[in-house]
Length: 341
Ligand SMILES: C[S@@+](CC[C@H](N)C(=O)[O-])C[C@H]1O[C@@H](n2cnc3c(N)ncnc32)[C@H](O)[C@@H]1O
Ligand code: SF4
Ligand code: SF4
Image 1 (tube, rainbow, N blue to C red):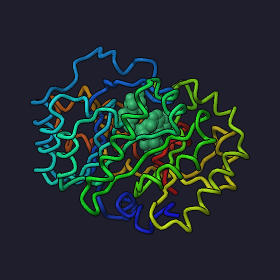
Image 2: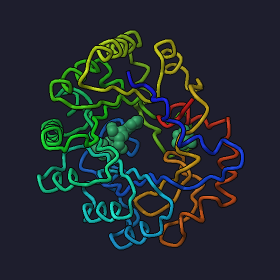
Image 3: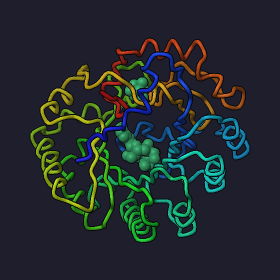
């Protein structure tokens, strides 16, 4: 099972070697906070996504921001639902022209052939991620819309059938108390659909009230998980995958079966003590606000409308943020999928 590729960490860890200055090469871009769904486990949750208390970056502001990026090689474009962003294709084409590789995350419900044909024709897609959280009733219950499953399956099918060879795509399944019993069922479904890769993501959630981030009821409901069943599902996945040739499985963060109980029952359990993206990336949210980390919304380092992200990256504020995190991440990191051993 492709739990960890041997070179996965090299990009992120290079700054741990003496003499190398951190260099900004990755942007986690929450391009919009708007969404057509309101999923039960989502960080934004309960309609916060659609509040829009401040104006989001408009097209021109996004293009200007992209033009300031010097050494950035990778960008995650996510949301909210990024395919709802006006002129998303123009924006993605601009990113393509800059030679930046893109990982796009979508719920798969914003579908048109024109949109998907354009995305499939792009040369800079690092990964097209489509979310699916289980069989029909489960997915629709989690995603809180009756149409979600059918539309997402339509998008997955379209991509599998029309993508060029080697076009990278995967389905993301976020594990929660609502769907942990359906891990294998979903794996079998995705095999039958010829999906090349599936990524199972342990739920990220806030363990303190210090951050606005996922202070949500799902964290409580994790207590309802029958950990024997979850371990069994993950073990089955492991063995099935050894013999399966046509689908690759990833699980993040990598929680070994001997660690499942500690990970799920102890909010303080430290699975790993390094953050992957911290040393090379920044988050920019839909308003243009810049943060050192995708989950911890402080310190806010400025706004891309006023400040160049390259300058922010080695500012005193972020250097001390990184220094504080060095070898001792915050409690929120214990349940974040970006931690690395
Ligand atoms: C926030 S969504 C944004 C992109 C798009 N709207 C979607 O649903 O794929 C990105 C991914 O985060 C996952 N996600 C949502 N809440 C999560 C949580 N609390 N922990 C881990 N992943 C979560 C979603 O299932 C999705 O796969
Ligand atoms: S579709 Fe994505 S962004 Fe929207 S609520 Fe669901 S997980 Fe969150
Ligand atoms: S591991 Fe911690 S610092 Fe890194 S992205 Fe997650 S919450 Fe942020």
